[in-house]
Structures are given as C-alpha cells and as structure tokens.
Figure (cartoon, rainbow, N blue to C red):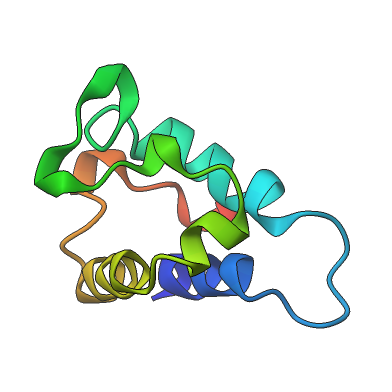
Length: 90
C-alpha cells in the first residue's frame, strides 16, 4: 500500500509539492523496477510501455493505463516480489 500511495502522490502531487514528481519519483522507480519488462529494449509485456512515458501529463492523459497501474500496484500483482523497491524508499 505504501508503494501505491507514493505512486499516486507522484502522479497527483500535493499542491505544496516542489519539483517534478514524475522525474524525481516515478521515472527512477519505473527505470529500476519496471521498464525491463514494460518498455525497455522494445519489450512491453501486457502492452504496458512505461518507457514511453516522459512526464506526468503523458501518464495522466492515458486514464486507462493509469487506472490499470494503480489497480495492479494496489492489488499487489505488480511489481513482482523480486522487483519491489525497499519499504524505506517511501
């Protein structure tokens, strides 16, 4: 649940947030834990290409993908056990 909450905050940051949450929070997580299966080297398992996302606007403009990501993270089906970021990261 902590991972999901961090994900949602990065997509819809609080009004007092500074900086670019996508670049500072989501992009490093996607790069380290997601794109090797969902976008890097032209792979896109389950037709999810996170490597193509370049900004929060890219993500929020794809409502179905955003909903699928939140559902997968919230249900625990993603990321897989061997790709989960350490809890202290959030």
